Image 1 (cartoon, rainbow, N blue to C red):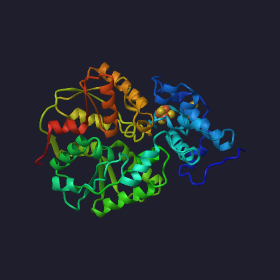
Image 2: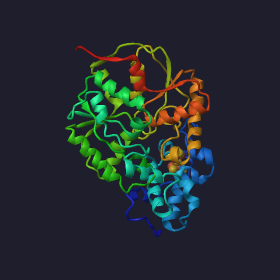
Image 3: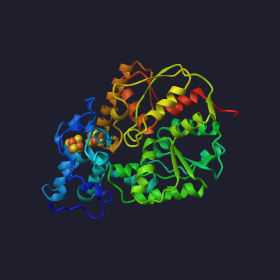
Image 4: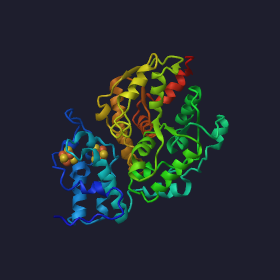
Amino acid sequence: MVAVKIDEDIIGKEYLEMAFDRCIKCSTCKYSYKDFEPICPSGEKFLFESYWPSGRIRIIRGLINGDLEWNDDLKDAIFACPTCGGCMDSCQAPHADYIVDMIEALREMAVNHIGPGPNQRKLIERTLEKFNPYDEPNSNNEELKKKWDLPDKAEWVYYIGCTSNYRQQVIRDATIKFLKDARIDFTLVDEHCCTSPMIRTGQVSIAKEFMNYNITQIKNAGASKVVTSCAGCYRTMQKDFEKFGAEMDLEVYHTVELIKQLLDEKKIKFKGEYKKTVTYHDPCHLGRHMKIYELPREVYNKIPGLKLVEMKRNRNHAWCCGAGGGVKIGYPDWAVEISGERINETKETGAKILSSICPFCRTNLSDANDKYGGDFEVLDLLEIIDEVGIEKSEN
Ligand code: SF4
Ligand code: SF4
């Protein structure tokens, strides 16, 4: 028996225990399963075993059985990973679905012993002070409510998310316009960070407090359903709220799910056409983390005139945009370099539009498009729908 030393206060400690008897170091996690295409941005970049998922699992084992001592040299191996989940999809062992949970639990423990990853402390400092990780004055969304004539109480809350509210406002505005045109009974609340940046970087001490705050705000608006246009917020509300013990008894939708439902029920129809070729980038937090692959494609394919083409690596084998897991703030140049591969793959498709359904993907893909001369538009699905227009069906 090993002398296991797992910090008592680690929320994900059950995942750390999985590191002991499950990983056989077969390396299947290094490439997409059977397609054999690179899937792990971290391993591909640094090319040392400790930067591949199997190496990270060995680091966990070493640290908790005492073979390895905590020191700053471990930081990059622990934090230089966008938690894309490519390894979860490729690994065929019983712990596969939990590899990202293991990495996040390792980060929790690292924060206690050697501190957070590069620049990542800023995320929590800013969020503590301003309730968002972007260092922007908190918007209580009252101005937006007035501008769009939204009620105080409603069936739905549109949870905007910090990236759409403070950096990618085109997504926020197109989403509000869509919900108004579809005549959804919705409102906005004084939301705080969803906690995704905290959880992905292992800085979880205030996460549950933020979760409960947001749940209370949504319930105080009389809502039983919440819709968000951010893949990160969606994953966090769907999976992490429960993991952290927040009492989440609300229905959570990503905008694309609501659009699909309204189309299927023939409650909305598109007004115009979009005669352009589009390729879709699967956000990791919606794809591999939540297994939503076909539903967005069905919505794109229903837009009149739109031609959807696939990148070489798609669905569960999609290459990450590189922004997640604290990489955008911790390793900004590398984050854009990761997205650069998506720019090259988009070029191969002949598409004029690179589209996704996550504001964080939009940010990083746009940065890479600018840096590597992609020469196409990077657009969220909601921006495309805004251009086409929708109307409520009469029936
Ligand atoms: S994590 Fe899974 S795929 Fe990777 S080496 Fe271990 S058992 Fe093999
Ligand atoms: S989450 Fe992605 S980057 Fe991190 S180890 Fe797994 S495949 Fe590699």
